[in-house]
Image (cartoon, rainbow, N blue to C red; front, side, top):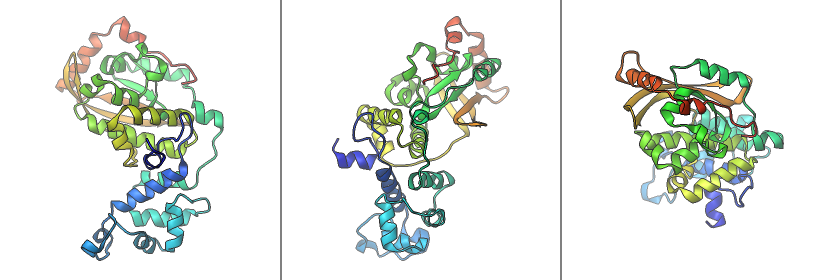
Length: 309
């Protein structure tokens, strides 16, 4: 992959290196501008005379109330001295969602993180495993930065597979979804699951661009998965804390499960995710069957990954 293509896709230039924050900022702004049509923001459309998709830089600058030169420098990745007020104006002009606005702010005005924290992440508290084990009839797990699956309960192992049999580095939603054919079969709408994962990784990249393990993950998936490359190149971000997932389980068939995600207070890197079925539904009966079929193997999956994960 040539350097220009790597920069456009946000792939690290060298294995183990950090993601290029300036390239991330540049591509994010460019892709957000390209998705807007002039008529979306009340501007005339000159049809065939337009040589670029979406809004021109000068049009976006006018909408945001900044000079064309200033916006051009920002879109070229130079956001060092940009103010929060200017970012707010640009976010409004681009019609960014709350998640996109936060991502833009992280890219343009990065926070300083300790290298140890950026590289390793935070260990989970032992009490979280005890809590998950008490949620016996409900699949639940804790996911951390880089889509890492950190701790889980017996029902999560029964529903998604025994993560305890995997090396710690493989207990990762991105690797499972993009590199394991059985997980493509598990999710009825695999594309949406893949989009959700990539959007979350993009958010992580904005917060922790110097994380070598995150950039290594992006590099690996970019090489091994054409679907990951395609989705990563969109630069889309969003926060998804609830919804419905349709699963195709090899033992109990299709399930329709609601999920809720909760960011843990005092530990923003970790989120608790729970799945549950509508009471009295076929999916609720399928979960009951999975619970009754619990084995020592699935119980072995309920354990904490090493603190370095």
